[in-house]
Each structure stands twice: as structure tokens, then as C-alpha cells.
Image 1 (cartoon, rainbow, N blue to C red):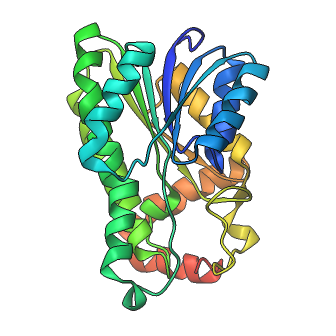
Image 2 (image 1 turned 180 degrees about the vertical axis):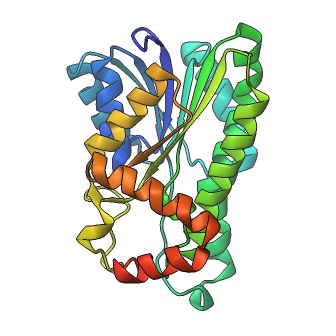
Length: 263
């Protein structure tokens, strides 16, 4: 089991949505949390909370979509805390609309934030982890990356890419002491994943940000490759079964999604 206490954790998207709950959970584990987000004021608030919950918070305001500036971010982190033990790629955006209505700028923004930023940030930090022979990367993906969601096609594509990149990199890192975990929540009842333009059926399962944060902690402590987060254990297992059957019969999973109104 991996001990989080005393570890330095880089958390992107720390000041809003699921990120706040992940930061609190890390604080309870007595971690040093390097909180990254665009809002300096919100970061200061979450760092105060981290201290209250028992951890140490370090605020670094930064726009994660500035991909060419990520080396500067890594330099700032190294100056502030030294080596990073754990990276949690949580920052993401969601734009809900029919694919035909997307602009190129919106598509680019989704892909850069949800996929390219975590890949590049990990690429920059991975050599240090490999040199030390220890480290953990946690990528917050989505069930939308397992099965495309109507009016959410580009988001689904970005999260599918995140899942597949994580899977391939995980295999490359076997035996190095560095681990990669993927967290796949469905609908979350607070944070960024519930949107008024989405039709959510209770059969699809509605989870909580606390469950997502707990899954992050579990993935690190137990070196879990992938965790699906849903309303309860039954729905988590049902989701896995549906996806497994869908590999053999894609039309079946389409009908199931139509049945539970995932659109």
C-alpha cells in the first residue's frame, strides 16, 4: 500500500468542482498539495481549507491550457516544493451541444484542456519520477470516454483519448515504480459534470464528488489501474458489465443508453 502522508501532490483544477473535494481528501491524508488553477483568489481559499483539514497547501495560479508554458509551471513547482511525488490531472472543461454546432475554437479548447495538457504535464514530470523509481499519475477521465454521449461528442473524444493514453503508458511503466490510474466517474451531482442541457436518468447513476475523491485516494494507495465511479457498487458493476457486452455487441449498448436516456 502506498502512503500519501508527507507526499507532494500536484493537483490541477484545484479551485473548483471535483478538485476541491480531492484537495480536501489529500489534506486529510496529510499531503502537501500544490494547487494549480487560473483563479488566484479561489486557490488561496482552497489552500486555507487544506491547512484546516491537516495538509499543506501551496497556491500556483496558472492556465493549464497554456501548453507551451508548462515547462515554466514545472520550474515554478520545483522551486516551491522540489520533487513531485503524485500528479492528479483533474482540470477539464465541458461544452454541451450537438457536434455540428461546435466551433473549431471550442473543439481545440476541449482537446487542449482535457487531453493535451495532462499528457504534456505528465511528460515533463515523468523523467524525475523514473529517476527516483517512484511516482503516481492519476487522470480524471469519464464514463463518457468509455461510451460516447449525445451532445457531448468532443468531450467524450478527449476523455477516450485520456483513457487510452493512460492504458498504453501504464504498460510502458511496468516495473519502474511509477503507476498510472484512471478514474472514470459518470454523472456527478456537484462540480462540472452535471449540466442543464444533459438529460440524466436515475438508472444511469448519479455519483457524488466525495466518491470521486475517495476513488482517487484509493487508486493511489492501492495502485489501481482504473476505477469506475457510480452511484453504488451495484451500478458500478452493472456499468462494467454493460461496457463489456458492448464490446461484442455495440448496438446493444446503444439501446441501453437510449433506454436510460443518456443524452
